[in-house]
Image 1: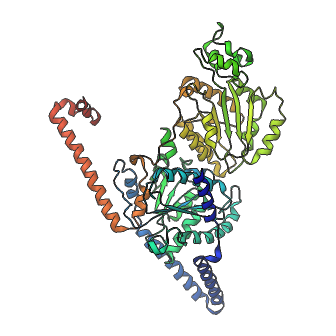
Image 2 (image 1 turned 180 degrees about the vertical axis):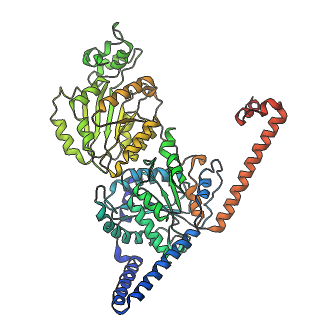
Length: 305
Length: 296
């Protein structure tokens, strides 16, 4: 009980957002405004043909970076083999790596429950792991549930093998029942907060001891919520502009197991943009219908047989 | 089936009465423990311990409201149907529509409530407690049912516990996606797909399912082990971490390949042994049968 209260308090403290302290988001914003200013000035001094040429070069650069990032990605066949590798319990062994840093995007209600199920199903005790939970502002329920899962983890894993954790809060990308035409604006707001959450080093893993190993998350795990797509889009942009090395911020999208025949809106966005490094669905039928999807059996359905 | 409920005073003597059918006896076994503690105690000594009444838990989830379900649940007709099937408790998690449900329930007279004690609240931090109350357990409580919206959070929790489940899709959400889940659960026989307007029918179907199966007499609930067994663990996410370290990934992939080859080799050798030892008759059958003679 004490531990639960302490963890809840810790998560609440951690989740406080403070833009002034952070340099990265400010830098990014300044860069964005700088680019805007330059382009406005350029609009008056350049000819149409020159503007078009610059825009074409810019789009070409984005496209080239996107393709070169995609080229390093592992194909879904690889993912299918990694999932069906049952019984082969000694690999993969990540306990010898310098850092294992997971970034979990929690939505609300059902999304959180599903994500916590996945975390429970994938957890493995080791000292070199750090978990960061991204929750939406005002979602106290999710924070409490995370705290309860963490108590379970802390009780089950002695000697620091439970690893470290912290949490961040961002505004919601789209509230339930929010009209779709307003969603892009709230998404932009969310995006600015996400830059911070993705690039701030965890204070519990100080650079003096771990170097830059914990600077960026290794794997972003997300399911259903629109916030998840915003986070991944931001992560992809950071990689495109060389702000984060290519071998960080790998994205795993897990489609909600509510979807057995069609993809959800977030799922379709991920599928069209193809930014996720691994695209998992939790129903066999949907996996067969969706090209490039990997079938990850749902923990909830598996439990009941 | 409704007979047993109307004769409230007779519940303790039902097993002694010669006129009741087995179905009635079963029904009357599960009622009115809240009003007859002393008689319940006396009854414990006979063959059937007196169990509390069935419990129904209605939940609409944390995020969005589901007014239609709450309205249906608070009709006298539905409550009467619950009473007829041996239910005595109704818990309702109302979400944002708490005020509406409160108003509807307060307007019902005691007669319209059919003797069902209703508890309701907006949210709860611990859903599992309520879900467990609906799970039948041998000599503790009979199976009730959870009536849930089609959200994966609630449905997952209920399926993990193993309580009987009726799923009602909330049609007001994006693409009406809950319908898909409700249908697929019904197809896989893991839940009953209920519809607004005919919930009483779903309760009836659930009663049939409970009386046919062993839902009333499940062993005590034990939470799943944590950390999960190594064979059940999702390793995909660890592999994804390894993709950040290409050299380490190559080494681990090589290790995995070696182990696979080892397993395959052992498997082949076993087959070869079975072939040599037991003659051609065993060799034609599959692997599962091959291992049986060795075990004996």
